Length: 386
Ligand SMILES: Nc1ncnc2c1ncn2[C@@H]1O[C@H](COP(=O)(O)OP(=O)(O)OP(=O)(O)O)[C@@H](O)[C@H]1O
Image (cartoon, rainbow, N blue to C red; front, side):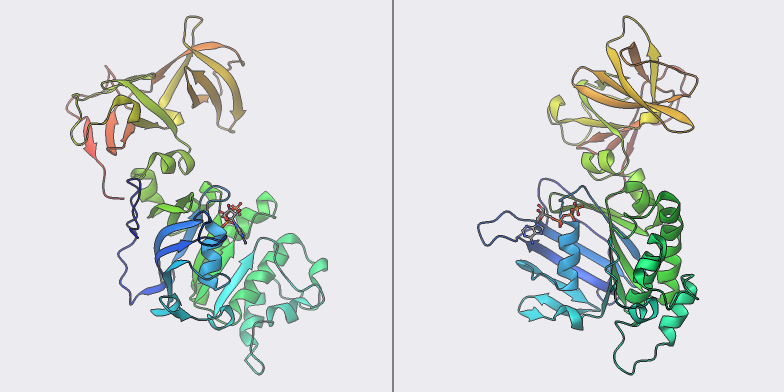
């Protein structure tokens, strides 16, 4: 089965096999027998030693399933999983979860309620194995002095630190984290998530963390793998995702951008674009072409004759984010706090001066038409490969 469908770019890192802590090759999975729907479809993913990779996607896209296949809680329908260049699942190979040497951290901590913090931290150690690493981890994670407490005597943040200490105590090469910060309040969540990569680094562990929060993934991960409907759309550094999203979905879900159809050659409902039509490359019909537009690059002007209507707004702290309806498009528009417009107000939309947008499916960067823009700047810029 091919790993590439629907024009989605499945290329992932070019890590050599010898460096990869985890390699997932053309992995397919379905739960309900041969007639059931595919939950994972042709996933290819490699994690280099010491990397922290985020697995990002909407609810139900298969993130936990991929983690369970790597951990060995499920057997893949097709494809293979390799740990440290050793096949552990697929193509006739099978290594049970307890022999894969993987640390796991779950959303609900999964601590043993009848064991103390110290006993929980040491749970994964073999009989007679040196427990000084568990003591070091409790100190590293700020739990020194709490060794004799039971989980119900710890705060949410302390429980999650303990779960991390327990996962890291046996010195695994790989730690899988399934939405580990979801049950924590904002302050603890921000503190713990910023500590995670340094703790993994000190421990020499590679991390794969599931999240459905794009800002979390972009903030802490070396690379982010974006999934949808069981497929991997893109795996890239946060910077590369922002600069060159591989699909409209990545632009919408990860970057929170607007998707606006072209309604004519080099034109959309927000305004005109620079450049010649037809565009170089493939030339699908206008209804297949979508522009990715950053909410900060749209201007909103109240105008009783305008074709757009303000549907609501959110306070972002430094700006408003307005929800604006024009025709079939529901757009997000960021505006200065000084622009105080109520729901139902008619308005007109335009591009901010110098705005750049990305055209799909060609993945070409285009400049919006702006009479005041400096001349001589090329209107078309090819995107780097995903
Ligand atoms: N044991 C199971 N048997 C049958 N279907 C399952 C099983 N576990 C998960 N699924 C289905 O597989 C799909 C992917 O589930 P999965 O838990 O991997 O998604 P997810 O991306 O982790 O979602 P969330 O972010 O909501 O946790 C869903 O449609 C789910 O209903």
